[in-house]
Length: 174
Image 1 (cartoon, rainbow, N blue to C red):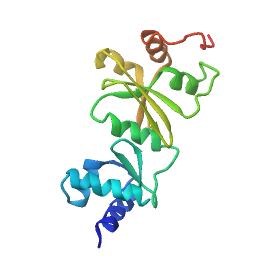
Image 2 (tube, helix red, strand yellow):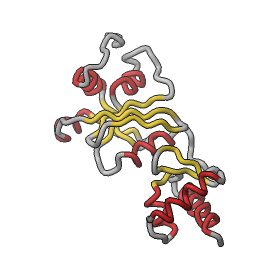
Image 3 (cartoon, rainbow, N blue to C red):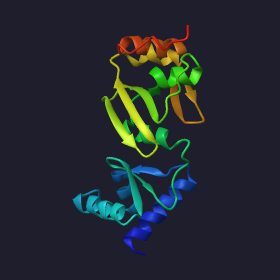
């Protein structure tokens, strides 16, 4: 089996197990290869040949076995800031709960204990906003959304985050 076939096999197995979006180091590990400049070059060549698609810097998906589009953006968020607390908040959460009438199209606003940043993906824009608040102050105001496998802010937390980030509060219905 060629290296490209092995890569596609890894993606196919991952999709069956609920995956489908992976970082370059994860792919190297699953293929039994070292994450090195040569492996990065191999992935770049696979992107050029249409075998895989780069969804954002360092994160890839298979073109033959893509992930479920309805949850792919949340998987990307977890890959971007794995190992730290991330939760859907701000305008995305307030739109989801109906506290603002505007519906965010192609954008997810996330509060994170990791670095802030904005990432364009084929599934939409991910806007990560860093918070300095301690996790023990935030955690009681979150709940797990099992459909997307991410935490969401309760309404009062989302409003508090909106205020803390000096964002527009005029959209609030109440």
